[in-house]
Length: 444
Image (cartoon, rainbow, N blue to C red; front, side, top):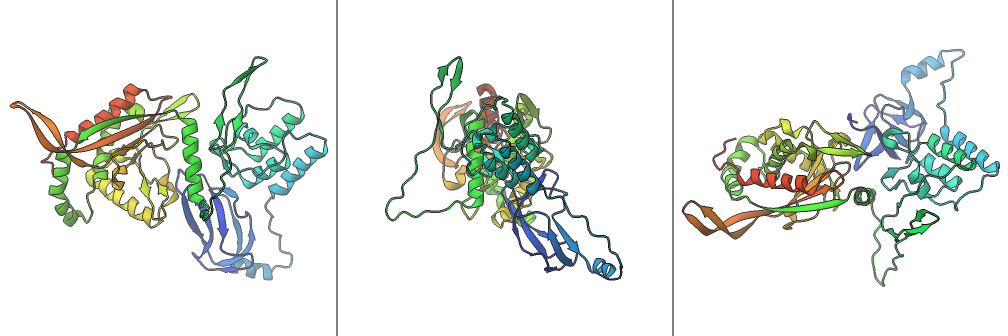
């Protein structure tokens, strides 16, 4: 799955127990972030047992099914007393028994049981955790406040049951957080020295006559949750700069034909902008960071995510790993390859993970600027607007004159927790400086 992928969600089994499976035949479909993949069988055999069900989250390296091969079947047929295969431990029934036992001991639930969403406030909850929470009457806000001990802070079965025991013993519940995407916090009201935040839910929408109701697909739901989480996590600030990219445009027009013949690749503006971004990150390395609580993690590699629109209308962000080690030709080939495979839904899970800075080209849609939302856990994102010809004042030793120049707006959104205006504004200005100083006589 790639070194940056730790787990995946089973979304559909393609084979049933007892089915014969050929070598490399797809057995199930899994999902990691926004990428769906099929898992092929490493050998021929018969599917004897599924160890996980649909919607279960499985760590990379765990067995997901038991296959009986022809050799194993033959061996079993010639053995008088075959040793039974060790059955995997099923955690769900035991967990539910523990939860039921706690209920039988007379613990009062704080709120009425409710359906816990798979993703809430940037947290992912497995079917087992959601089931226990519902049985125990744990509200989603309580679940969001539990400090998880699993991978990447994920709440596990052990964490939920420990919380249940503490609540039974009368321990104070953890502070609740606002999790509803459209929730609005009312002004804090002081009461006995403590502040209380009232959470207001968005009013229900009544469809008008003739309205079409469209259910979000899985990717759109994930995008929505990720965007809400980002705005909830980071105080966004956006700085704007207009860059004169006349030399850049003229150079591309002059070289794109020869480049296509020689390399078999189209030269778009995206790799040229990425090259300038990489140079600016080297000048301002504190843009290439992430925030973990009160710690700032400064990344060594510069991994540039490039937002790409899909035919479905959804958005995906493939990542150019170690872009600082690539020349312009390498960046161009990486951009074209990732963009093409993104449109064909052929990206690998590892290719959309590990980004440290993101570029989105809103100029593709004719937009002059935008205020992009940070792709967590990064702290900054740059939007490149459309390139338009404008009359502009040009300063020369002989005097100023008005000329037609190619101009483009750059919009830089950044996390104000760790990136102040001086750094965020200086960075985007430096990107513009590199674009404006492009060498018209450059050879590749």
